Length: 409
Image 1 (tube, one colour):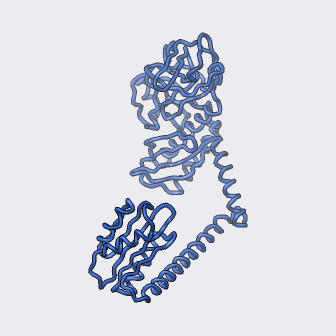
Image 2: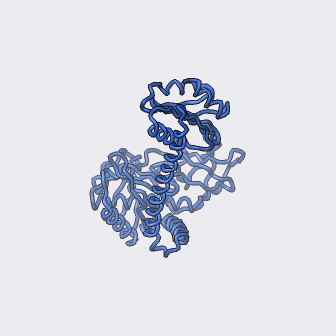
Image 3: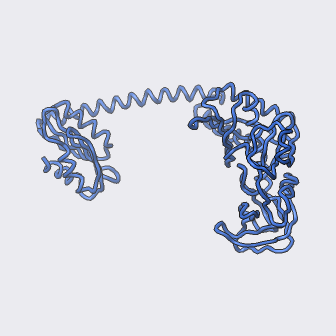
């Protein structure tokens, strides 16, 4: 979706002679309106109503659709289909004659804040670093733009964010105008438009001139703030995640709640939570490493106990042993005594698992054991001549599985 090519293309509502006559273009701040029902129907998306005019914005140009109510009937979706704006409503509802439309203003204003913030932030990246926005997505939590660069520094992000917030703080007017293709030369457009008629420009004077069919507030101050949250590498681009307006407060509240909880659990002031968490993670990794070394030592000791019996085949069953533990134990056994075979079966919660391994002085392929054992448990496995492993359903007892493996020898 091209972020800077949100240009309207055709007439979109029955009864409206020109796109510029649509209520959401006449005044994006309209919250309620009156109109006539000119058509009702249903399609694969559900029942819909077409009005003589509308302030409900349909999905398009990177901006999600409005919701709200027509009379007291909830508007669930708004889409432009076959040159008309369809307001999708509950199937059982019936509407006719003169009706009253009311927007879900919290949703609309949020979309206007995010969309306008995108214009401002995109223009900042172009102005400061000539990084063009190649795509734009307005999500339910975060907004993203993809910049046509393979890397962005923390300093560049901070500079672009500051420039965007300076423009917001200046409370510059946001103007819209409809122009012909010939008139475009009068404007310093951030990016070329892709249509030849019904061209609508959204202008922040002396800063950003952009072809766009979305809705925007009347001044930059209404965006309140832009905050970049994170970035990620996307093939040859950098994706910037950010929020504007009320979403900044929502993100701040969420992060404050999380930080307070982390600081409380670490018993440190919030500003020291990061350092304390780093220290805790380092200690946890050291403990995990020591625990793994202890487990390995116990497995090695267990293996010595097995081979001291003098048996040429070490056949054992266990309760709740992971396949990784069985593999390590089998290797310890066959390393300790190269002329033995280890056959190990674990009875785990929902399946039987096994490992078969041979010492260096044994010539028998362990694949024959796997071939014999797997059908009896409807299982799957893998490995090589020296060691195989597998697992399957509990169709037989662990002891029966072990006998099937021994029989293969």
